[in-house]
Length: 351
Image (cartoon, rainbow, N blue to C red):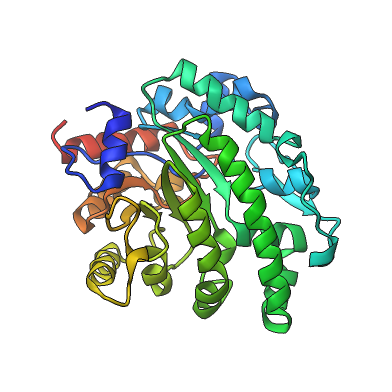
């Protein structure tokens, strides 16, 4: 079974001899930038360098995927927000937005031709030629987080209390933009799309708001994606695991703050509950698989090789279905720790 088949099988719920080790979130690190000659900020705007950096941790450390782009600002920039592309160890951030309310926002008809979207699409094409046997995972900003980029996160959180209808209207508009982008990505046949919704974390919004406003739009997006799909939400998502599991994604990516054993129990409870309904499983009829949750903020960033191997063993013992960093890898993380993550997975399965 090659790497593409192994990842697809794991996300489908089929038995695999060795669980995949990938990153469904940001994976570019400075040490890899230096070794490949593909550094930020150039790799954000040059498709050749984006492809090279996106596959760098496979080439240098054996991580079993390519993943791009390296931030969650691509869509907002194409719609009209100003983005600071950062530096070699600083990812892009939305610096300002011309929109003050929902009525100001107009998704350009040529949205897919603007900003870095053409760069991402071209980079996917390049990867399919240069790494034809390697799984390609493409990140898409979730509609709620995209709305926060356009209106400002603080304004969005306030509007949830004062004018939730306006929020819902704009999240719908953001969903339309996401669907256009997803359609363009899907035509290039990546192996998976990861929808990243950091602003939907329970640390920022109430779980009830997630259920009433965010979840229905993610359900629509999940139904629209026609390749393998993964949902990542940052922070301690234990309180919304049930809702994440009833959206329809093949995999849900979790951080180290989440108890994997309890999360797996929640998934089983959802699948057997009549309240879960048909949305408790993906289109193939499988329970969402757990992706994660090796610490990026501590273990992979500043831990020793022994720390990494212990964390990998803990995650696999707890039952993750796909081994991965818990969130985006910190740019100053050492390659040695990424290699140790792969080695620990190999040792666990006697590869």
